[in-house]
Image (cartoon, rainbow, N blue to C red):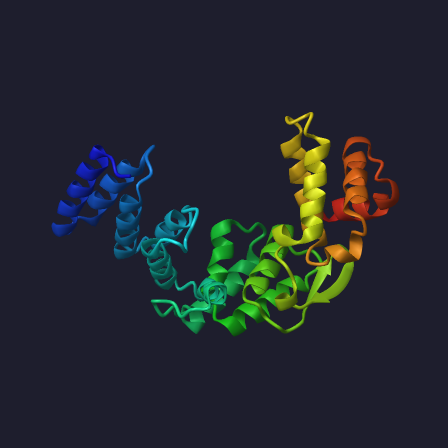
Length: 277
């Protein structure tokens, strides 16, 4: 729903746009979204962001929508925003999800810019979300080659490794990729691998942790957070390290609370040695 005040701001923004004042139009639509959700406002603001070379803000805004697929207007805007950001990798993932051609042709950035993105990424000591999203501007060959080079670094950032694995999985690639999982060099086929949150063992362990702390909800977020760190460290090879999810969950709680991981003590020690402090 769009409120009366939002409709007034939409009208003002349209007048600003006709006068060529995109900054004022954007400001009015941003004001319209404060405290109130309106799809009409969001779609028009995404359009203005793109017109004003603020495609990164359009991406952040459209990705906040809980469902990018069922509403045709939202889906079309999402595809347009991918085009404006040169997010070819995400567009290819979207094509795999929908099985359809996108309504806009998405191109990667130039080869020169791709080289700059990869060099800059490698040079960073800490990677933020925007740094990572810049990799989606690469072409498929550069992305897969670069992803493999990062996954072969034993000290690669935990979150980056997890994100790269899941991006390769969303692309449904059938090639084998090598990856360090704690101190073990292993390999996986993305097309044959589930995303972490869809892995049955991940779900069982998270469920077991939830059950253990149902009587103590204040501790649950911390325990779920630690569990995600541990399981993410073992991804994409959870099956190699987790035999019985309930036992694993019980041992993990004992390790976190008393430093006694029982049969999984050495494994937990290896994991936490690799995690950033």
